[in-house]
Amino acid sequence: MPAEAMQTAASFVQQLAGDLNKGDLELPMFPDSVIRIQRAFGAEEVDINEIVRIISSDPALAARVLQLANSAAVRGNIEILEVRQAVIRIGNKLVQSSAVSFALRQAEQNAGLSAESRKALKDIWAESVELAARCYVISKKYTKLNADEALLTGLLSALGRLYIFMKSLQSEDVDYAALEPIVADWHPAISKAIAESWNMSEELVNALEQQLDTNPALRESASLAEVLSSARLILQHETSGEPLDASEYPLLQRLGIADHNEPSVTLDAHADLINAIRQGLQG
Image (tube, rainbow, N blue to C red; front, side, top):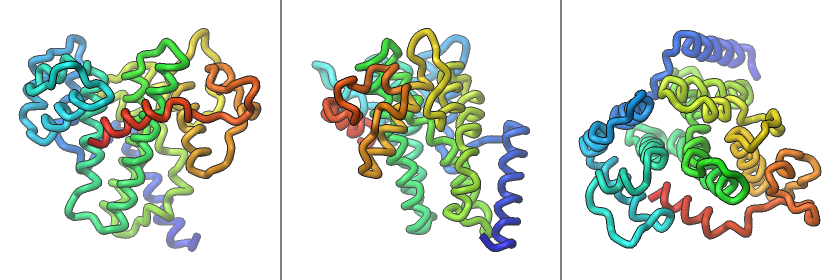
């Protein structure tokens, strides 16, 4: 990397460090309604009336929540037509997930973006959805964790990358593609800080911080950190086309994802559920 580019990257990293220290981590291009929802759910006592008011104030978000409530992933016997009914049907975690997925899609479709920037955002959005779907399946099929919270964890794991990318757009001198090798290790800390500001659970926050760890600390029972790390490992190998060997990752054996008689690890047996979650989030 040329000296000038290195200096620019270093200045950008210093800015990220300053943002983290100040707790100044507002997400550019994120709809205000989505931020308000996350903070409302972070209150000591969640007020469903307030949640419904916030969602209803944004017609596009309301449509998204209703769409998820009527999707194949969570569909009931009766079609949901009102926001309050949708919130009750899908529950707090899926409402939060719906809001985050809505915000990610809105950011990607921002009319002011270049084709290159739109593609970068689309890639971030797509990865978050794929991770969320796999987190949901792993938690539901191999642990006793709340699968809806695991899904939310997968979605939120992209917030750090999203923040870094959006900040790079605000500086004409910064090329996100060139920054990627330098800031890759920063995004877990940023995701963690944003989740903390939204008063997310301690376990979820810890999972975001440890998301690049391929062997999180062993706990008495499965953790969201293990679920997210497993989902990332599996997705990375699916994307690369290289077989995932369970013998290299004790984590997969601990969770029971790996078959002792079959070294190659996949979630192919749960492809229909993964696809249902994917479609539910993408709309």
